[in-house]
Amino acid sequence: MLLNGSEIVVECLKEQGVDTVFGYPGGTILNIYDALYGHRDEIRHILTSHEQGAAHAADGYARATGKVGVCMATSGPGATNLVTGIATAFMDSIPVVAITANVTLPMLGKDSFQEVDIAGVTMPITKHGYIVKNVEELADTIRRAFVIARTGRPGPVLVDITKDVTAAVCEYTPMPAAEPERLCRFTEEEIQNAAECIMAAKKPYIYLGGGAIVSDACREVAEFADLIDAPVCDTLLGKGGFDGRSERYTGMIGMHGTKASNLGVSQCDMLIALGARFSDRVIGNPGKFAEGAKIIHVDIDAAEINKNIRADVSLVGDLKLVLQKLNGKLTRQHHPEWMGTIAELKTKYPLKYDDSRLSCPYVIETIDKVTGGEALITTDVGQHQMWAAQYYRYTRPRTFLSSGGLGTMGYGLGACIGAQLGQPDKLCINIAGDGCFRMNMNELATASRYQIPIIQVVINNHVLGMVRQWQTLFYGKRYSQTVLHDKVDFCKVAEGLGCAAIRVTEKEEMAPALEKAISLKAPVLIECMIPEDDKVFPMVPAGAPISEVFDGEDLAGKNG
Image (tube, rainbow, N blue to C red; front, side, top):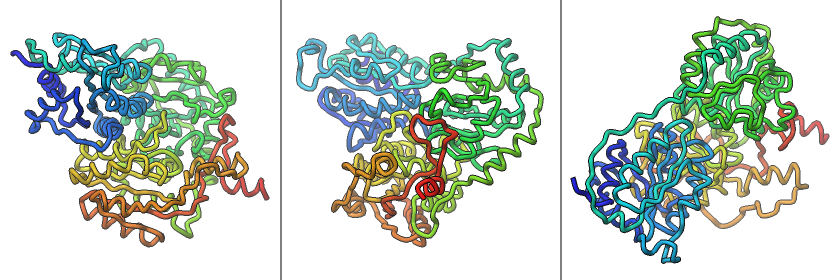
């Protein structure tokens, strides 16, 4: 059938099973928006308040559903406003297709109004980028974009289309969406070698990353942990990949990981990294990370092997496939002495905080209790993010969404909107600090416009908390540009944007406020007022060995 380029875009989205698109229109992409209007009953378009919000919403939709998220923007500033969201998705391996429109082909390269080489701008932060200058290539390009975004290690793909291509006509033939292949580069010999190494270990430890969630390997991970009788720690993005209530679980590893995890990994003789990339925030000093352990590294991306930490054994492939093979080679192991040592570490070094007053850990624990641990949590970046990782017990995958690699302040609200639309039966709660929230709080207008029943929790300490923590500990309490004592009233802002608002100042108010917010089934802001000098502990100084993890009591003893 003969269709113009804009209609081809929409038909290709339908081929891929896309039901929701996040975006913001403009001059060069008007033809595509006109085509979307004719298919508004098949593809829901969510008009965000800012293009960055659209990119984060597409990211949140993808993380919550496992499907490809889609965002759209016009040329020039519309396209460049997507960049932070695209980079966020790239760093965390999230499948997103960003569709932009550009000036007409004759106007390219002439500094035309709102012209920018967005494919060039995003080249380092996408798996691939296209600029489509011929309508005959449009359908195949979009199809390839979706395949690339979700195949192997997922990531964002950009498709930029000149405006004349969106109007040009050509023959269109529908095609079913291609099924992504699971990457399998390991051999039987490598699997056997890994199994033998694991069975020779006396003190194995599992270090779990986001790859477990991406590959849908959580069941295989649980089976593997039982087979080898090992404790499990996770990264920020690995939350929910292993049951956070399991006796084997020791909490997060790294800069703000638990003492049990950091000290346990430092004592193990075999560290098995599953879908994790040995980030600097995890390993601290690479020369002193798990010094006495052999390292087995399983990852879908061969470029991650030996990049930060040298592995003794490596397996490249989809984690689900690797573990299915590996579990079949293992005989059940028993390490009672080692598991006893880990249990002692957990007992000796529990997470703790001052529970005499309202604090972020108390807020997080209350959310966990009131929701029964069944909520889908998104966060921004900073102290509240670490507390949300520490004090909410995640039992299932795709229930904790946060910017890990890029550390994007302002990520959470857009992501929460996308997650709620992708998982409408889930209670979706975004937790943000006041510094993060003010960056993209305009997206409350998006939630209000569509009556998306998200709950926005603002942890308000009137400072940039994590930066202030560093200034306190390492910069002589010189609080340069981290104090936010101004006249901004977040409850009034939320009400002005069409949302309900509740302010919490005492512990006893938190549970009733949350229960009321849930009952409203509408977008609600809960502002929680906490002290400005609360700190996230445990902590490892940047570049120090993770075995040097310390908490508030250690700090008080040192200073005393």
